[in-house]
Length: 192
Image (cartoon, rainbow, N blue to C red):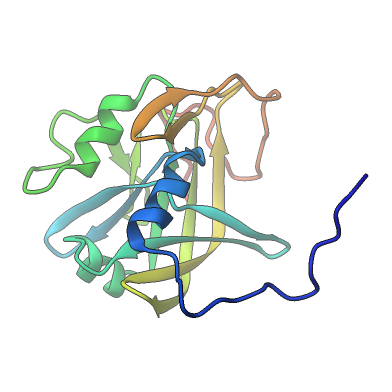
């Protein structure tokens, strides 16, 4: 027996969802872990993001959100392109490092620049180089939409996920996905 859902959500304006309730719901919703990296006049910039989503396959669009208080926000607002590094299961410390405030997030992390200048982290499950499509202020965050222009995925990746304030490996997914122009290994990014 199925229960029909109302055509429109029922809204009770007198009792909204509190920020604490909202956060609690999402703590139990697993999210993939990525590190967004970009270049700035001051050097490489990067931060951990669990808000990356696929928006469209044709054209290839994705998005992420960034808190208004993020130290990376000025660089993201100025960037024309960036890389979304999808972390592998063994990169929990990388995720933690890029989530810290007031430190050199690239210290001790293996990475190399693409010919276009964006940093690519070594050992990731996958990465996408993308051009910024739009920046939209939403609530206390900035929603950034991107158009993917270059992709790389390693064979049989085991991604890192985040749920209930803890990092977890996710079971291996299907075999390799090759993209035209992708590098032969994760240690040697292709020229854009």
